[in-house]
Image 1 (cartoon, rainbow, N blue to C red):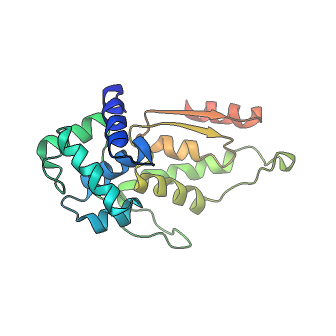
Image 2 (cartoon, rainbow, N blue to C red):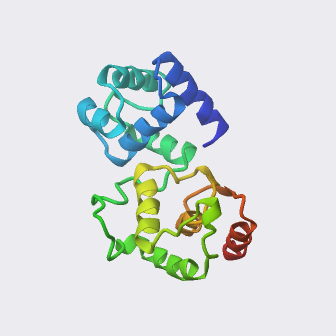
Length: 197
């Protein structure tokens, strides 16, 4: 997120007394960007933010010139959100709910099948470090969940331990601005560094 946008969203959150802060405002804008013209009730359900607080945030967003009306982002607002929040998807990129297994990836994310090769070659788990390997379905579900929630697009992401190699799967999406991994196991760090090249 651009520094100017952070300042504006922080100010909006403070003025609306939004406990979720800047992330709550970003969440509201993300949902409005992906689902134009939502009523407050549905937007509240999608963001988990109470309707009165949501209305206060929308009013502050109108005052800041980001949205045109309380329930409409508008062309100027859509462009602002896309460029300042670095969003790629102006629609729900993963429209279906997740079931217990993923047998086939959505066509748009078929490139994530490449992760199978990385999964085969990762270091064996070090149980003393509480490591265990996630299977393909779990890695993909975690990645798609983060895509669906808007938690990858234009973000700097840090992983504290990544023996599941979710960072590679997220890297394959090309959506994150930056990915950092911190791990106590040098084997994991070496593998991830080599894989990223």
